[in-house]
Each structure stands twice: as C-alpha cells, then as structure tokens.
Length: 244
Image (cartoon, rainbow, N blue to C red):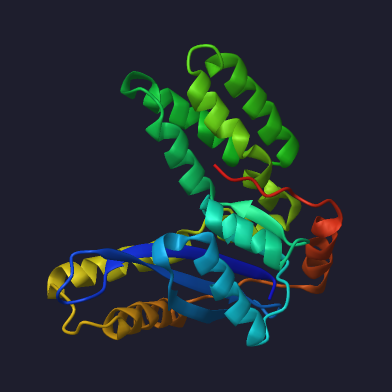
C-alpha cells in the first residue's frame, strides 16, 4: 500500500436513537495505481482506542506499513498511526487545516487570510510554501496570533506531500476523496430518513456501497518506476506527527 487514506464520519445509525456514532474508513492506493477499500467499522467518537483497534484489524488482515497516511487532524487517529507505523510519513489534509484556520479568523479578515493560505498550500514547491508561510506570519502574526499559531502548529505535516511526485500532489494533499463519500452518504440518509433497524449494518452497508460506486469511476494514479523511487526517497527524512 503506497498511500493510505484514513478518516471518520459521525452518523445516526439506528432507528430508535438520535445519537451519532463514529464510523471509521480506510482506503488506499496500491503500487499499480489502483484504489482498494480496506475497511469500514464503528469507532466510538473516533477515539485513540477505536483507531488502534481499527488499524490492528487491518494489520491482522495483512496490511503492511504504508508509505504515506493521509488524514485530518484527529488526535486519536494520529496517535494510533504513530504507534502502528512509527516510520510512516503523515500528510495532514490541507482542506481540514484551512478550515481550522479560517474558523479562528474574524469575518473581516477571512477572505484575505484564505488567499494567503492558498499561496502556501498551492505553492510550486516546499521551499516556496515555507517562504509564503513566513510572509503569512509577518502579516498576521501580530494582528491574529491565534490564527497564526493554528497554522504553524501543523505546518510540517501539512507540507509532506511536496516530498512526493508532483503528479500525485492533487490526490494526496487532502482527504477529499473520503469527504465526498461522506457527503453523499449524508445526502442519501436525509432523503430516506432514519435507517430501518436498531443495529448499524444498514448504515455501514450504505457507506460501503457509496465507496464502491466512487471506486468504479476511479481513473487510477500513475505509478511509474521513477515515481516509486521518489516515493521511497521521500521517507529518508521522517515527518513528525502533529495533533491540534
């Protein structure tokens, strides 16, 4: 497994309950560029214990250490990944990070901060991205210290994707492929109303079905020999795990 995407979603799973429960999802991209669904399971509140159990199940079923894990900033997930695969690089989803930063930004500055964030995460290379981050700090560090701190706390893990082949950046800098699936599941549940039983099976089956639908239209990721060499070289310098 070259790239492993991990994320969770909260859903109302049972007919006679309004409580939301966490569902954990894993899918990956293999060395031939194909996409595979690895697991869908309950995970209470996306806790560290839930993620550890989920990852251990994947490992028991044969999953070896992936080259890169792409995830949001869930602290429990990051701790579990660090324990399961201490040598694996981690990419923090830049879409989540930008939302986190903008949530702390006053409305009057939000548009300008958003523009500046894009100059960082859509820069031509890592060096340029770090220069743009320095400019962000110069511009906003005094006026918006909490916003700047939020950005810098996870900067290294947000820029991991630059160490991988440029042709893959669009795929691996966000966990949007799973986010789109979650939105589709929520859309369908709004249409059908509550699930028909008091157990989680129909909800998990729906999530699995949507993942399968999205995989059907998958164009794959180009994995040439030189790209695989670059991917292996990307691990020469470990990227630290960072939580919120």
